[in-house]
Image (cartoon, rainbow, N blue to C red):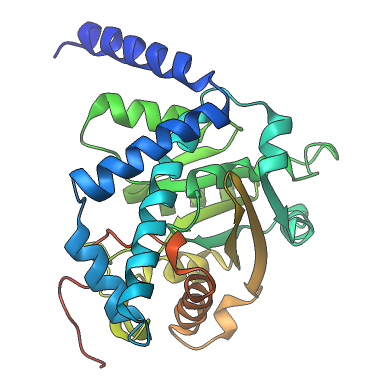
Length: 303
């Protein structure tokens, strides 16, 4: 595909999606109900993985509880799809009403001191809406420059990659490629620009990340350690985005401080704290996590 063809296809697809995104969320949730039915009962999307993951993570669940959690997971996942589409056409005021934050004063305080922040978050609730954190910070009102960033892994499909980058920049945040994130954050520090950067750290470690084994949801689990490594090397404060789904289309993020002195903690202490916090988030409402990810495909043992 030539660059011109790519641009034309991208603009056509983006235009179609933009028209769909103008529909009220109430209408889009009707579409979500249809997507839920297709995913759950027709495609049976990764059904065996979802069932196995929930059952193994909650051995105390009855068969009925597993089925109920699985059904609600598919509903939440369908909602995530249409809510992400809605990012193409949603006002700042409506987003502030639907995605709320507490603990933002901690973020503003640390950034205003000139220090960077590393933020752990996960595939819970609607993680794409978390980029609206920029609507809650008061730093710009005070004339303080700070950049809100998130780490991303480029998609193989160039058109989808461009679309997702567009959606993730909707509220002014900046996407940093995973392979270059540390260099980018070092560049920010040399320029004297404080940053808060979100790291999606609930997947399997990438190549080059040896990981750290923790007891997570009744599984020996290899957790990503690259996030902790970046925090230590930058001497960045570390926070956790604790996501709640309050109702359909309404979420809340409680920003919880993990540490302001990462170099004072023992190795992997930050990763351990994150794993514990994420486990509590999932146990509070199991259906909001991305159970379709084959997280435990390759079993590991405690070291």
